[in-house]
Image 1: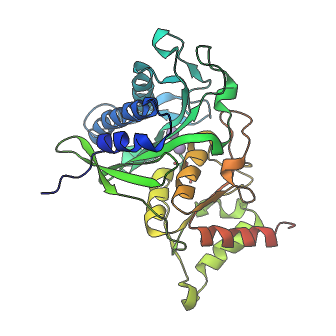
Image 2 (image 1 turned 45 degrees about the vertical axis):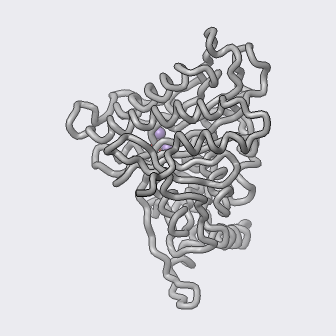
Image 3 (image 1 turned 90 degrees about the horizontal axis):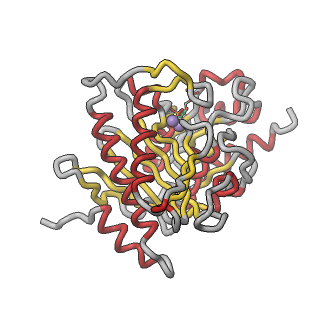
Length: 337
Ligand code: AHG
Ligand code: MN
Ligand code: MN
């Protein structure tokens, strides 16, 4: 039997793609993959243990924090802190960034930004959830405490980004800027194995993903684009199929594989959209571009945006390039209305 490449082997083999690589990024990815396995184990038994439901308090975004949000946050935080490559973490679940100032982090050059558990409102009903992470090289000098500046970098400066989807099988998908690769967890041996090498998003697809409950609040261009998706046109395969899980990672993962477009636009209920630039949009934008797709805020590439605060939200259009282009054409046409 041919042995599949494991994630551990793949990380080591690909270290040579980075000139002067010291192995620090490889170690960092190793901490993330270990934490992902721990979170996977806890999520798998969520219905058995007393870990479902709300913590009884809100996070910094005013959203109900789930017990598993806290567990995932603590697990990734601990894994990153236990190794010496990361000098600070910003998390969707923490109001401020966390600086790792002890001895072992003196030479650390990377910061990590993460959404430890994405789609957490779906946990109680056993629907797929995820983790999203993004890695940058620090800007401030090594050996000094990290500052906000280290975290507020444009997405184009990412060194690596990825996500884990805890689904019918658990997968870790990541990029270091040399394409996108997906690994499926073999639960019998507890190892992520390369199952989706060199992932490419189809140029176009037949799926649109948007929370249509917000329809009346959307800008005119988005409403018209949604109508276009629903209109019959045999030549372009319309009407498209509407698919929306409400877990960004899962919605994105499906569209990455099958081709499709995901929209979370502005609306009066969410004047800047809902999704967070640093923890959700930048990492997925890096991945989609590496897979041949597009991600924008409706006007500009997500990866070019200059962040102004940790928990900043932006409108998000991501997916197959021809579909995002068409959505843009509608946005431009109705810009004035
Ligand atoms: P999180 O659970 O990390 O707060 O993220 C929730 C996000 C995202 O996963 C999902 O796509 C989106 O919220 C769904 O929002 P709506 O319920 O407004 O559609
Ligand atoms: Mn999220
Ligand atoms: Mn989250």
